[in-house]
Length: 116
Image 1 (cartoon, rainbow, N blue to C red):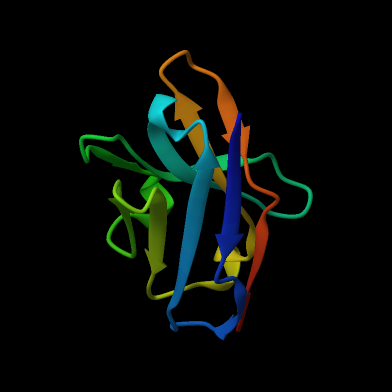
Image 2: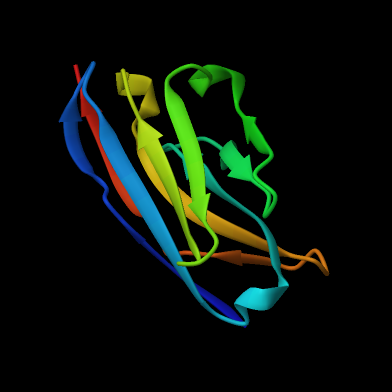
């Protein structure tokens, strides 16, 4: 089992920045990729960004150039730096960890609200 705890959500004005972090605990040795997903009201959950243990990253087109994902394997923590935020970035952001056996774990989510 893997437990994920997110922090850093909140309210920010459009154009502002916000950082999220997610700390993993439990059976962390089996974790390969970690990432962030988001779900806006009335919409499906979507991938925002992901990073493998080796540092390979993947971003949604809508956040490329504005968001940056990083990972500290020693601290078992993944970060998401969000810059130039837009109202359409408003959503609940969920941390995700995928194990080498392709099992997914999820955090409880943290709300990010971007005001116009």
